Length: 384
Ligand code: GLA
Image 1: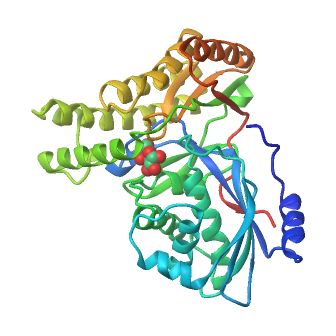
Image 2: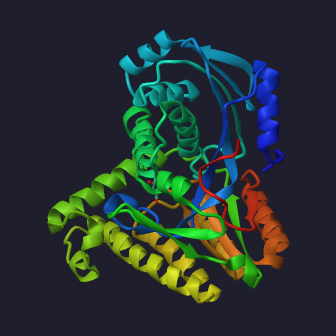
């Protein structure tokens, strides 16, 4: 993370400089990282994410006319989106792409007729598997919901964010990301039961035990991310049909081991065993058995690599080097590139940095981005 952290005061001040008035609201939508429990949400399973101290910030003010004016901290020029252009996008071919697509989708879903002045800043690295996209949707949805009178329920926001991704942007994503961003609480991990759409904060108090988490952005391309993700969604749906269960989280390990097709069998094995690892992680973290948590991270990575087939050589080499150092590590999120999560002792930071930089330079890869997470951050909230 090269940019300095954003603050609410700064957002309000910059908004004033741009538009000559104070914003009505400043919303903070954090990125998320999943500690364990990947590729389980769309099969009714468990996940254990935290919110990151890196967020997308949305400062907004409603306008009298229907124009949406947009300025961002990553593009020099300001631009505008007319009501006509928004309608044309919504009626035109899908999927939609770019920031304008998020705005058009949110305005459509919430049936917002008036325009707005928007100032957006983000600290979340894009295309790193840290949910920059869901954070942007949620920041915009939250700001636009303020104009609707009734306060937004968490469940509405979560489903509307999924709608932006699934229906408008053509991204096949599950409920994990929006649930994590909306419901995460500071200093806690969020234990999600995707099947019941239920979540509760659970202890993951590594910091008090001299432990630290790092998110390692491998900066490797995620070329197969979309097609590979879709393929896994279809494979697991097919396994459900064959087992005659509504979702794999309802099947036992014994049942999935009897699936004759070897690919469907290993995909299903991952889902069932990963659910078990989430439960064990919750238990081990409650008892502060960090060595056990590290072991579960390695096992999860192995399962995502061998049974689920979503790892890459860069992710594998990163996790292997961290394991040699005694640091718990696994790929996190959808895989096919993106980020690795690591759990080690506070003092390991310098060694991790040195070793990974050496590895990446030996292999001719771009250096990784290493972000310490000293404690889980707060979920979606209004800062102004
Ligand atoms: C992506 C999706 C989530 C989830 C993860 C894998 O982040 O958006 O819904 O399926 O992959 O755990």
